[in-house]
Image (cartoon, rainbow, N blue to C red):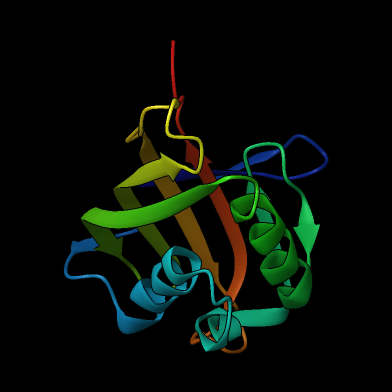
Length: 142
């Protein structure tokens, strides 16, 4: 797989990254469990303190901001359940594809199951920590 890194000055650098399709790691499953259980605890420890998260239009800076904003989002009238479809691993970039079942508190609103894709960039100095999370879910309807 080849990735384009776009720098602020507009220059592009081509980088080849080899991925291995494998089972998702415990840290990734822990994030989804914290979200699904609405606990938002230790599963978020995989993020570096200064991690950046871009989910859709979100632009959250810092592990605690990520935790707080996801909690606020999930508490807006639905319960989520995340399922892994496939996971691709490389040393500094992890790619996740899955489905999320969103069941709404209002019984008149039917559940939806949109596709999601996430990129987890690992911290260059501590590769056990996520430094940047980019993800997209949906659409939830057409």
